[in-house]
Every structure is written in C-alpha cells, then in structure tokens.
Length: 250
Image (tube, rainbow, N blue to C red; front, side, top):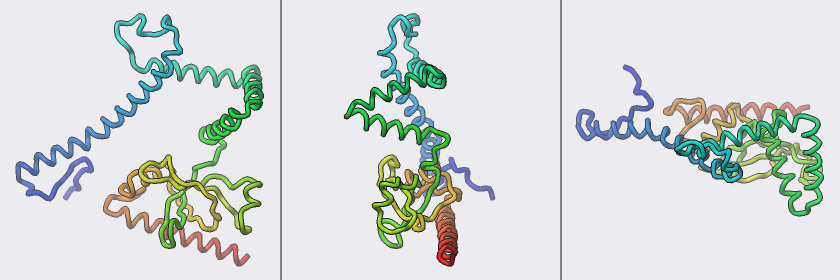
C-alpha cells in the first residue's frame, strides 16, 4: 500500500461520492497553487517596492521605459543591485575606505543621528558578516512558567558593563525569544548559559516551527513530529544535565 503524496488531500467524506472528489480536487488545487501564488505576490511586492524607491532617483533619460513601449518591472531592482555591488567594490579599495571613515567621523558629530546610525550599522554587520555568530544556534528556555519551554535564538555574551551588573557569577548569554507567528517580534533578555538547552537544529527550521505554531516540526514526519521533537528536547536536556554535573564535580 503506497502512502498518499503530501499534496493530495483526503477527507472523511464517502470516498466514492462526487462531493468528496470535488472537495479533494479543490483542496489539492489550493495546496499546489497557494504557495506559488503567495510566493509570486511577495516577490512582486518586493520588486515594485524597490522600483518605487529607485526609479525617482534615476533621470528619465536613463530609464528603460523611456525607450520601450511598456514598463519593465524590476529595472529599479537591477539598478539597485548593480549600485550596491559597485559601492561594495569601491569600499574595498583605499579611496573608498577613506571616504567611509570621513563619513563616519562626520556622523559622529551629529548627536541625534549618531546613535541610530551606529546601532543600525552594527546590526547589519552582525547579520551579514561571515565572522558574526549571532542567531546561529537555537535553544530551549524554561519560560514563561516552570515546566513550559520556549524556543530562543542564542546571541552573544553581554558586554563587560552589563555583565558586572547582572546578579550571580554564572556565565550569561543574550537570547531572543520570538513570537508566533511573526518571529521578527519578541523578547530579548539575558539568561545563565546553564539554564539553556541547546538544540541541534538550524535557525531556519526553528523559525519555521515558530511561524507554523508547531504544526511543522523539524526533522520529523507529520504523524511523528511531536514525539520526535519531544525526544530531541529530552536528549538535549539529559546532555545538559550531564555537563552540569561534570562542571560541579570539577
């Protein structure tokens, strides 16, 4: 007996009824066309948004629609990618670095702009830099009550100024607890490293788990997802307990 493909929907209606077949066909069509439609809509929205930002900055003489009978979507995105690539190329040489340093010195003299610019620059550097290690690991934290566990993204240890103000002598780490279904919002706090159960799952799978409210579990079939994730958490917790026992014995 072969398994039903994931894109085929079966209902609890009589299998040979016309209504059941039509409903199954409709739901299967939604599963096939829905992700494609949503993906295309998101891409179209992003492309048109970038075009709206870039095109007003381009003189009409250099716009493709000036010489063509129709408007070509995405031309602004192409120009933005080329401009950013050229900017990165220029930044890698001595002249570009000198200009960047002069710009940073100029912004340092602006009281209101300086903290905003520095914070945004550090965030971009941490997100896109190869040497950055923020949000590369996933863990479990006992929150919001004992016996309840939440997924968190592990960041960096606190700075010396913050670490000396935290109570206790435990090794602290910064964590971000995302909310469901929008993982871009959540809570940021410091927690002792020994209270975190690190999970061997990618950040992308953890984000999918959060956005789906647990309906899509990482690394498990749909009918065994809950058991698989519970076993993963139990194994990680056991390993964490063994490690803590070794540290206390030492």
